[in-house]
Image 1: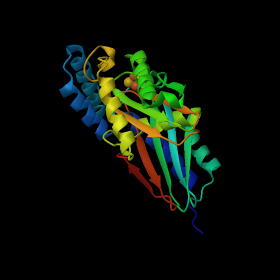
Image 2: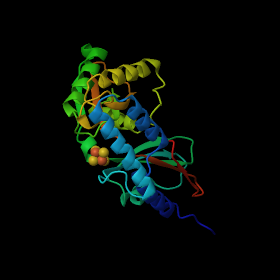
Image 3: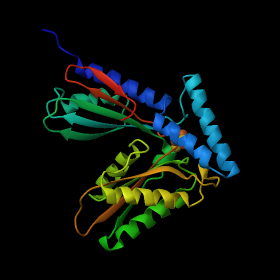
Image 4: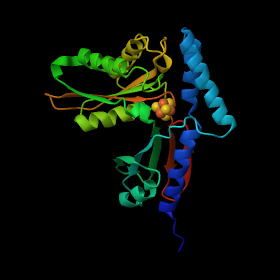
Amino acid sequence: MITTDLQGILEDAAAHLYVWALMDIPQDLRDALVDASERETSVPGRRVLSTILRNVQIADDQKNLVCQDTGIAVYTCRVGEHFPLHPTRIYAALKAGTERANWEFIPEWDGLDVKCVPKGSGSENMSFLKMCIPADGVKGIKQFVLESIVGAGGKPCPPGIVGVGIGGSADYAMYLAKEAIARPIGTKNPDPHVAKLEEELYALLNETGIGPMGLGGDVTVLQCHVEHADTHMTLNPVAVNYQCWAARRASAHITVDGVVDYDREA
Ligand code: SF4
């Protein structure tokens, strides 16, 4: 009988994802950084963005890391109900490269998706949570996001992706914010009300003048993503999580037969 070593295959995939994410940033991020360098009008901001682009090119040419801060490896897993490897074995396989795993269990599916998102410490340190009250409304949410990003200044290595999580509980709101920073640049929340909030926050945050690396300029954020969940009628938790300009991510889909499909765009 031939058996597939799914745990070994997953372990190799996790190791590959981490190194791949650290060395080769996704195309949507590359495009956003080029776009930012063309939009930026401040001299220090243009200089920072040109240094960032040169840094990315050198990493490509020399097969080196995009940033010296390898961050913490955050893995997000979507596990099919019929995927034949118990979560404890999945966790063991990820452990070598993982500090933390987020799980989502999918009924009537036999696959496994793993996404690796290395989080630089500079940006992870700029994480904020506020338990707003419902009366604060959307205005209160905007105010908190704005205050958080203004307070963070140049510390999270801007321009990056601002993730906002709204709803659920305190911990779930932060989980949503982290989901938000892991979305490709250019994607919108499928809910038109939330997509509108993403656009408004993006415009608002770029009016702050913080600019690349906090040196002043037009481009403070490359994108603002919002994820939301239902919550209790007396709650309104809002979490902000920042992903720096080195917004690295890499994904793999693993089938029940152990076939690994690496995906740059997910
Ligand atoms: S760019 Fe990101 S990974 Fe690099 S030092 Fe800044 S926060 Fe850390």
